[in-house]
Length: 136
Image 1 (cartoon, one colour):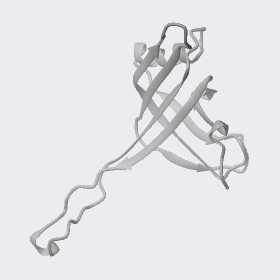
Image 2 (cartoon, one colour):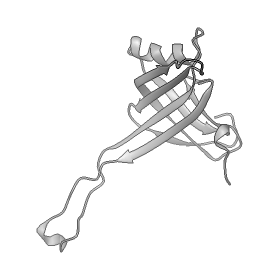
Image 3 (cartoon, rainbow, N blue to C red):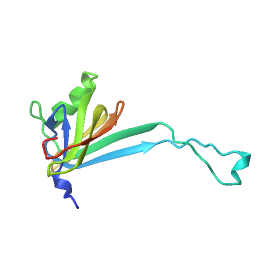
Image 4 (tube, rainbow, N blue to C red):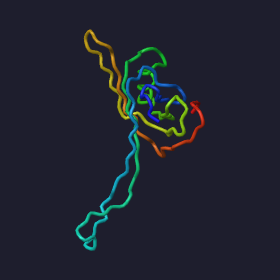
């Protein structure tokens, strides 16, 4: 099944981050070199540390408890948040874990919309959960 990206939501502490135009989940792992003289000139590696992050971008809302307030408070208060990344349509999986806000950028160009970008870095395990409906 193909999903429309508009239907994929990002929530912080149970509240959907409003006005987003894009959200990306990246999951990665380091591959430490394990090559030896016995490797017959082929590189070998082992599975190393895993990490994950979410980047978001969209329109900026300066209202209380809106996206700019919520994201910047994470840095001002040195607080982490629980994050969920999931399609709002019926699905089998979604992703969740705790994040810290690594950076937040607000852009206000002349005669254009004000935008916001944020980089959230996973703090610990990213879990892939199984659900039967959209109420992740």
